Length: 239
Image (cartoon, rainbow, N blue to C red; front, top):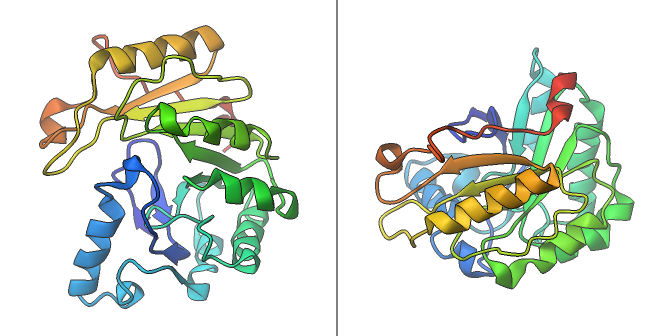
């Protein structure tokens, strides 16, 4: 558990760590870089590097939080990776079910596995389920997400590496957009962002612009149309 600098959440909780790359959005994975760094620092949790690992000892952590939190689950992994056992996923969901005072934001690139398992999971109101959509080659993830039992469904278009001109936002509650950052970030066209923002506005979907990215993301900031976009689903109001 750690306080997070990610603009759309408050903290992170990583009951699993590690992953493997599957599509273009994974090319410069920040979690992979961070895992190597944490392993070099001797952090026990990351001694397997970026190989998938489950951490039973982390399951008790949300029970210790005294105040309601907005929590990004598995910022350092993908809960629906094929190597994460279904029984462990059920344990993670049981923790989230037991703590309705917190919002848990789960994000995956493996929407096929998500859909395969979704009927075996309990979708309480506080579990927000999202899929990564970095370009139009992976928009099928949206259709798979739409079929799940999640009460709040969202898209993370980060890193946005191509246009998404015809998003089907039916049943989608929230869209996050952000450019890639790091040493060799791929460019994000302003028109791509403006188009997604326009699509969200027309569809009545909350829009969150996270960052322009680049080699110095603090310098490029997150101003769009002369303002910041920090919209979130209304369900956050129940906290």
